[in-house]
Amino acid sequence: MQVLTNKRVLLGVTGSIAAYKAADLVRRLREAGADVRVVMTRGATEFVTPMTFQALSGKPVHRHLLDAEAEAGMGHIELARWADVILVAPATADFLARLAQGRANDLLGAVCLAGSNVLLAVAPAMNSQMWSSPASQENVRLLGSRGVRILGPDEGEQACGEVGAGRLLAAEAMISRLAALFAPGSLSGKTVLVSAGPTREAIDPVRYLSNHSSGKMGFSIATAAREAGARVILVAGPVALATPDRVERIDVVSAMEMHDVILAHAQKADIFIATAAVADYRPAQVGDEKLKKDDSRLTLELVPTPDILAAVKIRFPCLFCVGFAAETQNLVNHAQQKLHKKNIDMVAANQVGPAAKATGGTFGSDDNALHLFWRGGELELEQASKDKLARRLIGIIAQRYAQHCAHYIHGDVIHESNQA
Ligand SMILES: Cc1cc2nc3c(=O)[nH]c(=O)nc-3n(C[C@H](O)[C@H](O)[C@H](O)COP(=O)(O)O)c2cc1C
Image (cartoon, rainbow, N blue to C red; front, side, top):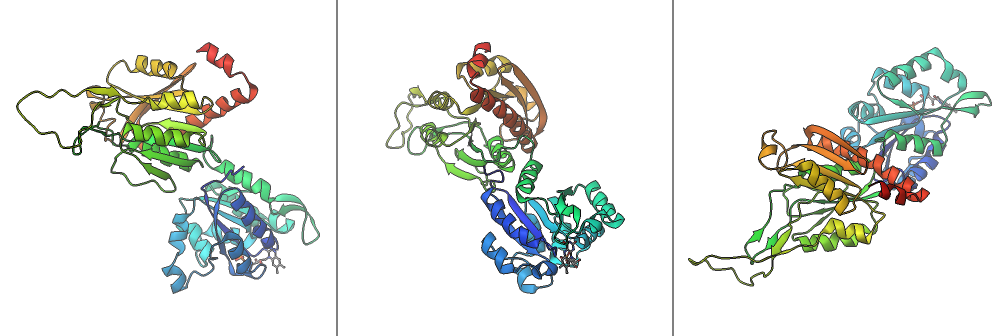
């Protein structure tokens, strides 16, 4: 399974006899879905050539700090910014000491300092006496206390012939530990389909019916799902928002277009999160020419647009579907009705209109509050920024999704539906 899909792993390789194992690690990280860049210390290049890592990662290998050309390309700050995680494997005793001291006298040390806000993991590899020395143990303890994740080492026979702790953690264990470092309830290897924004229903070539949805909540959810490791397909109505990093975006205008695009992509999705404020009605007739104003009244005949969420759930009953309910009144009742009527797995309800204005929430704002409902449970997520709220929501969706899968695997989904 691709447990590191979409993750950017900056692999630091230092001068241990285990450096050759890092070559296989690059291959396996890529197989696990990660995008890998390699930084080598000078010591590491004595053990394995940069060419090996370049061929395996498919990217130039970074080695020099004080090199104007390298800095003008992807310098140490850019490398740190690029990474979702910095993994130093193998990490020598000397590198651990430098890291503990905050030294920046080579590229890898400088990247680790510049990336002090990035997840940092080290996999020590050294002779067992070096590992158990008070200096190494003290350095590792200090690094651990600063939030650096220590992966391994393993015990066993060593290159020097000794037996004990100090072997580089095996690649398989390294990758699963790395995957576990990302958000608990991770969506690694899953495809999440998100709809966002309003739709526009044409009246004539220059006029349309729409609503105030800004798309911000959906875009924050797409970002949070991507951070949790998912491949994200974002189907967006007309909004003025930048595409989140590493999210596949498809722009649509009308409810009908959104319906067609979502149904075309739902088959490959594991989770569908419908945040779009899809117009419920569209004009029955769309004028070919601009309607001319005169003194008489104008009546527009409206016809219902397709119910996208209900259509998706009917066509793909196993797909975990989350609906959003923006309500001006009776929030709880309407949300629960939506959950049961559309037979979906979760509803995230938010207050809109005058009641929400008092708290500065919803349409166009950067903040929101949500009330989640599912069969047999509910949870209120307090007012917070849409980004923060989206991360919490994705964590809960991931948990509920895991239970949903367990039900399908054990075949007792009928039992759950009966309780509804
Ligand atoms: C043959 C050989 C093998 C080595 N293996 C290790 C090792 O496994 N772990 C370690 O901490 N140091 C090992 N060293 C020592 C490091 O290469 C040395 O401390 C070096 O300065 C580390 O540089 P770096 O951390 O910048 O890569 C080894 C040295 C030699 C000559």
